[in-house]
Image 1 (cartoon, rainbow, N blue to C red):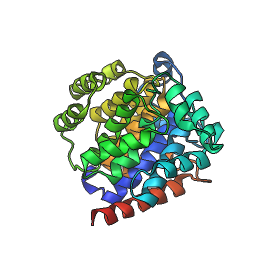
Image 2: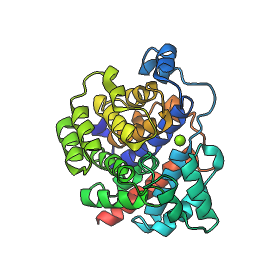
Image 3: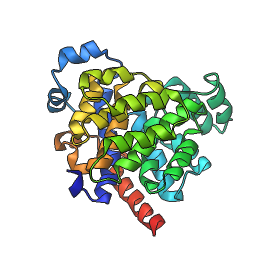
Image 4: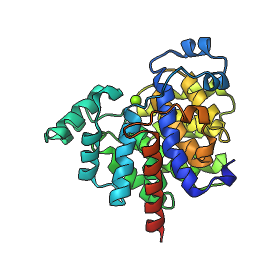
Length: 314
Ligand SMILES: [Mg+2]
């Protein structure tokens, strides 16, 4: 399927793939793996029988919108602009974690958010809050892996200064960059490129194991938690297991339970970047909220980012 997706379709697929994964996953956030497997026989069962009503995205998509807007306006991460985006988009009902909430509320009131980002957790947060929003960086810098790595770091810093929080964002961004660049995924090359960039064994080790992952029953070994080390590789591994199916990728991620919205958001962004927007089931896309900064807005934002990429590349 990836062979027919245009690059613009991949940009749109990435951002809408992120939003749909986030919004479908949000229904199940915090459920146990046991609960999920008792209620759904398979990823297909979950995808074909989504909860009734609209799909509402959470903080993951809201912050990714801030990153995408910053890139489409500035052409790179400008920290002050990014922080203003986070602050002005902020809706406390979107499921922000306590640390992010404190940092963004400080931004909104003009207080020193950097002090909070470093001290809310000792040494800074190593949660997955930077990884969940980073996908647009992978799209815009897809031809420049050094640029992906550095821009992902800059996009993390307003809230995540711990090296593991930053590196989680870097590997997700690089996964998006590579997924958006190839017509036929070579799993060996994909995982080797990711693992070889990592400074931390916490990532390079699991990425090496993810390369050899063969059975969905082993996906849970990579974790389903809110720490970047317990979720970023999980999302990448879910994509690597079923690269030709968006629904299998996010369905398997959600069936793990735990931090379902974020793991499915990251996995959905990578899968959408590879397969393009037509890989996202239309019944799910049709359920995605479409009022303020909803489906139509996100699609347009992806197209703006694509135009920015084309300008940058020329
Ligand atoms: Mg969330």
